[in-house]
Length: 129
Image: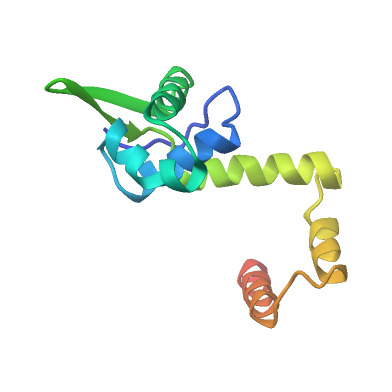
């Protein structure tokens, strides 16, 4: 099934996001494959992964299809759509909907590398065209 640009109506939690990252990298996957990718690093068990997958299906972010005695999971939400929605929420919530204060904060706290600044400058030049 193809990914869409439609974000789910409910927000995706940090734990659900970890599952989405696995599915964005490779799909379709069974719950056991997802667990193999994240369980050890996060201290999760298979029931935890199955719960998170069920939540993502209920939110419309992931689809499921039977494959014998197991199910395969595929993201319905494109990573780009998710990043765009979450970026907008961050800017709206913390910076009054304006991106300039975000960049100012990053610059003031020395969070931007020279490469980051060069990339931002390049993007700004492209936007001005």
